[in-house]
Length: 132
Image (tube, rainbow, N blue to C red; front, top):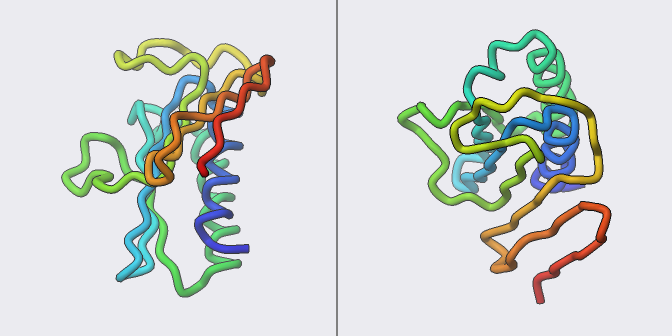
């Protein structure tokens, strides 16, 4: 499995577990850096999120020891500039005030901007937009 596929699969799991977050992912190929932006930044202080994040990072380094991975907030100077994957939970809002109400696995929206497709909605209507 490629590192990008591993990360995207695990980001989908995170968004399904933490329904009030948005994740954005960038891969810097020159340095093998994988940057994951998590919004809202307050989730980074959550014990539950930290457990999931530590497992994610440990599994990543076990499988890809020559790559680097980091979680950042949207307030970091570094930032995600060339996003290749975005996902947000059904309770994510731009004002970040909605709590994580449940673990509903059927209402997560995925977006792959680097692939020039609109989005993939995993809701109950099973409406998938695929890149050509």
